[in-house]
Image (cartoon, rainbow, N blue to C red):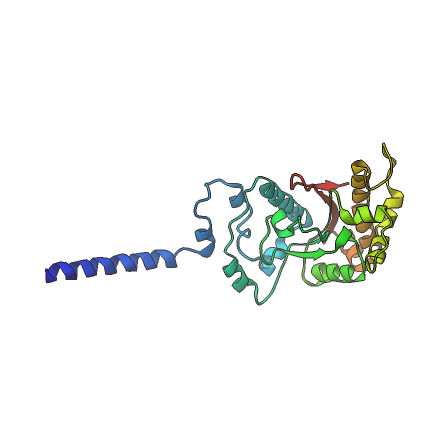
Length: 256
């Protein structure tokens, strides 16, 4: 009986040693991939999808590549195929520095989880959020830091369907500090294209047109009011684009 017990202990010890070696040789990103089918879209994005970006990796990126990756990430979001990430590992990797790919200016709307919308994780993108995705001095300074100092390659302004701030601007809402915020959207209201029906917040077609125009004006404002960013774009170091998020589908499309 004693011999059997010794044998059992030895066998268990060998099994535990083998298990420890197996775990030690498995990276956090590999462990996070368990259960995902081989050949999934997740595997196609150059090994930086689950790990935090390094300076060298960031410098190799182009604005066009970053835009392509964000749109591909949005397709995964729409199809509910988001990347499985080890967030604890990413927190540890990113504590000493950050090398994001892009700066995204989004509306405050709680229905637009920006990192999820583009299937991004910790350290991937700078996100600025303000009602109506308007541009002011603080936003411009943040964008200049994100691109000129921290190396991001893309600026994307994201508006969305049925934007409450745009509707309020159309309705001339006057309320505390909301009033000067909405004043930044009024130029888009005034430049909105003629539509069928009345030019009111009750007309979805008109609201969506003003929402898109508001994004275009934000992009133009960035170029006009930031010499730093305008020069970087002219040199091909960054790209500045506008986009539109559909609340009903989760899809993002570029605005010409």
